[in-house]
Length: 191
Image 1 (cartoon, helix red, strand yellow):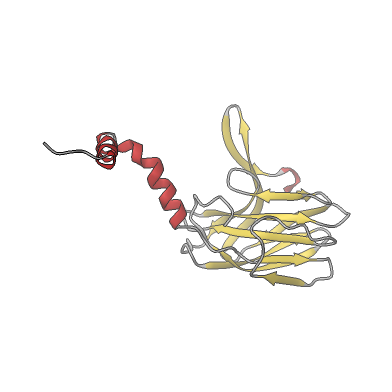
Image 2: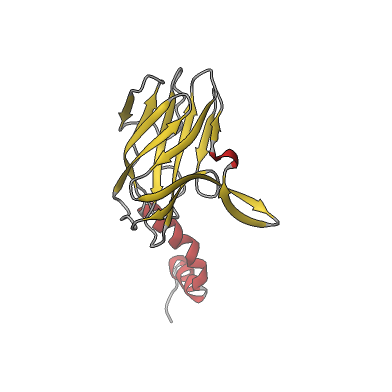
């Protein structure tokens, strides 16, 4: 008769109910697929954009500037749509508005949101086609919420590749984002 250790007992119990391993495997998979932090772009309304590859992982409010951080592009699925997520902080004393974007390889780009409608989660274009970024506040565009929507995507992009895009703001002007990482659809957390 074999002596079972606690390790043997735990493994035997898990193998008897393999569905219990699914959460552990998902956590390991998501951890292994984490992307490096994307650069931060800032613009103070004078048309100059700077990129900081050492940007903090948490939103940084920069006094007097509109900052765009943690830009991630969900463009890898074999479909004709995709989305882009980011964090926008308005360190100015004036409300600003994201009025549009341009993403190479996307026929149409719209600003969308996910909302509950009759107990069903639906995606639709934001009212007026614009996202307000209030003065002194941070707005997060993320999976399951506000996002930039790519429609009529020419082709899927490989996870780990990068994409450039331009964001259009009412006050800050155009902000060019270079080398935003393409992430897997499930990567909704900040890098």
